Image 1 (tube, rainbow, N blue to C red):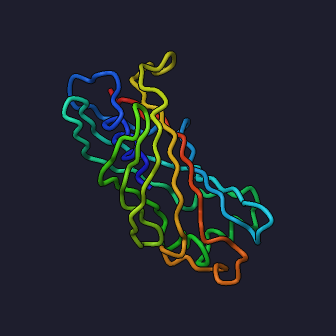
Image 2 (cartoon, rainbow, N blue to C red):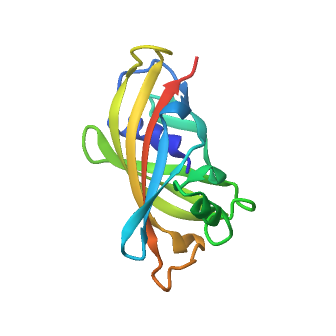
Length: 194
């Protein structure tokens, strides 16, 4: 899911501390979580998280120009906290990671809904199939990090829902054993590169 694309567009939409010229940002892997829930036979929602997310982008605060975006999720990094289920989620019934190792998102636009909130639209690719998706984005903070790397950092919370069948992932949808709707949440920090 090109998550960083959302990050940069959110900054463009909602505004933040001025950057004098286009700046390159990278996703902080230690402070990025992509997680999802999906219904399991109506009893409860199963939680999963992707552990490997990477990406970079260029953003100009003055012109609100976003470019050079490349963000991806390693599909095989999925963790549902049960090894047998993880194996099933990675096989052809769900993510088919041997044939489709990457999940990507590329943003195509955004609309503000408040000073620090808005929506970002874009193209999500799963299992080699691309579908339009709208993300709800909240800009939590944009400031120099207070310790450690001390770089300009953008912090965002992002949410969306998809129908997995739209991407050809139809296993157990018809009989209701596994829900079609997947709710996705992302917590991320993007750091200005030196």
